[in-house]
Length: 454
Image (cartoon, rainbow, N blue to C red; front, side):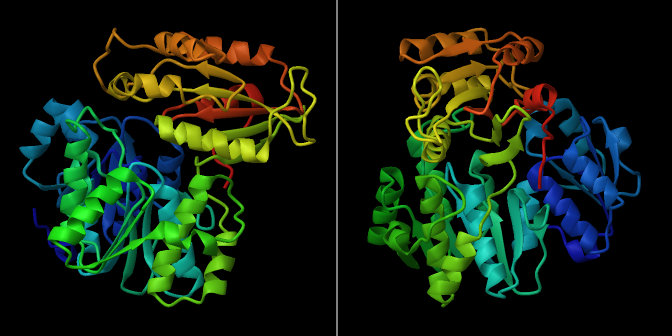
């Protein structure tokens, strides 16, 4: 697919409220193009885009696309979950491009630093971006969240550096030709698309073959290390660096958790490659305050309960987030008196994301809530998947209890909200909404906590 963007004046985005696709919409607007779009529902992101002057229609049909549109950019969910609309779109008589294809187009010819992996992409991308921005390298950045310093998922710089989050789903990242590739880890995920871990590794292998200068990888991750060793043996056209060797350089961070120290180590390799002073890199990373919905502290209730929101939706991510919270808030005893003054009880309200993921990783999910004192489960967020009666939050709750943990499932949001109100949470409690769906809405209703605090 080739589109000469310089000649395109009017662009329409289907699914414009998506975190990634909205960044491309912002970028097109900054390039003085006429930008409009549609989404199935209004959101914080669509509201922010409308403030920029982008007209957004609620709904999804070809009738919403302006007749004089020259390019339609669509979310990757469209072909899979609305095949009839996508068929009409292909016959609409206008150039079309997916979000991943657009990401390839806008980074073409740039010194692209791509951050990939099953977990940690967003935070690592944001850390790399901060180090480059603080060191006056003036990069452009597209990240799968909102950067707190910019209140945006897009930064447009004047240099040739472009830092991007590269997602492996449906091999989307193969549209990118990185100069530098970071691989944080490789684990089973997106098994509604990939056949198995070998299939996932093959996708990363192809991305490695497209990388021109440097591969930065997690030497403690077996699936990644095996792939890199094979690459070095058979097709090593660029350098490789194990970023775990930089862990001793990572300063004390503002964001907790061993996973964040690993993310910072990956950013350190890029800084070292660019000859950024070690002390400057450490100062930049020490000042990193996180991104939207990545273990984001929302505030405290008037009763003193601390509220967090987290995007974790894979067992490894859940365990990492709970480990990070336990660094901040060690366990209390049964009557809530901390063994340490900062001791807290942690209640997690989790919404599983997709029937396919919950089913494929069911046993791992059941074991992933060990760091919580109580786990509450909302119905599975199935996006547009067909309902699968063989899996449910109720079944997951039973499996969690068999692992010796406290868990309870709820049939809907309303019943979960009413139950949370009865918990009488106070100063010895931490309440965490967790998942890629809409669990945060419960905290908004019960605790009057806004969904975005940056």
